Length: 62
Image 1: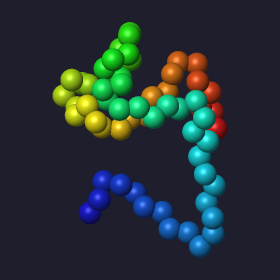
Image 2 (image 1 turned 180 degrees about the vertical axis):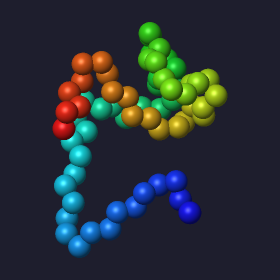
Image 3 (image 1 turned 30 degrees about the vertical axis):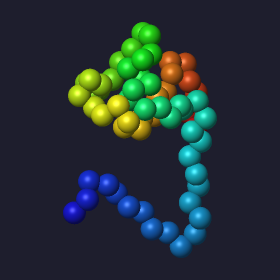
Image 4 (image 1 turned 135 degrees about the vertical axis):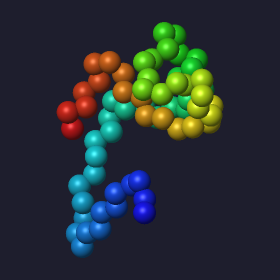
C-alpha cells in the first residue's frame, strides 16, 4: 500500500503549469525574512528537504 496515487494512461497526459512556484529547501525557507507561514514546524524538518513555495499574489489558476 502507498500513500501516493499512481495514474497510468495509454495517451499523453497534460502537464501542470508551475510558473509562479519556486522550488526551495527548508533551509532557504528558514532564512527568509519574514519567515513564511507553514503547516509544518520548519525547525523539525531536515534542512535539505525540498519544498515548493508559492508567494502571495502568484497566479496559480493554471
